[in-house]
Length: 298
Image (tube, rainbow, N blue to C red):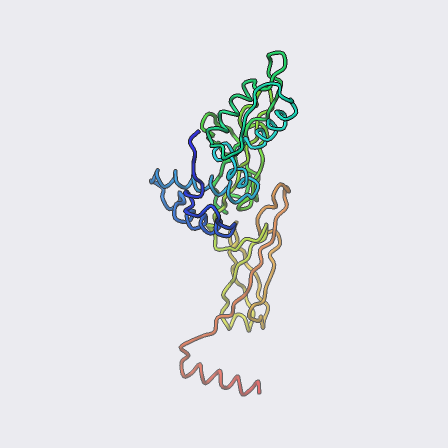
């Protein structure tokens, strides 16, 4: 397995903070997103690499393992377990020295020897290890999470068909058990961790399952009342506006938000804030009428 310098991929220093990692990733994701580079295979490959780098470096535990074991970071737990078994063996089997700056290749050789029967009893390997976990990223648009959908994931050596529940959120990770690497010495398979990147292709702001938007209303309709149209994710709806509606009045359209994740027939709400549009370029006649109105009010 070729070593990939995740820090170099994101263009950051190995001492970068979590905020630096997030900032660098978002900048590159906007630049290399497939929607902006539909026919650029190189950009799509780089986009996959920055996603992989972000998945590891943005997770403090994974980053710690990566910093310690490089390309073998996913075997870190197995490596530590093997070292504990080695100490417990009290001299039985092979001995490995990992101190003094062991290289990534040293770790790989150690794994191969250990998994191939380095600690054995009666000539047969007894240590079982879970297969390595795999990480993948799936890109979706916000308009695509309105209902369950089926997707085929290409994991390189195999393809799997999964159902994505409606309402998944940006950055959400789900575990698909048993779809990782093969176990060692009869150990269980690893798991697949799938992270969703949901890009907002709508005019709404998303907060969980709720959506937020604004609606411009002319002064006369706001004062006298009337009927207005509101845009939702599933079409337009008509609302009656009460007379004397004030600026920044907020109304709730129940159930017009996004589906609630894994809660069938449950939806968030759409909150609409009215913005009163003041008239400009008044004619002399209009100014006269507004002045008369002012005198009536006072």
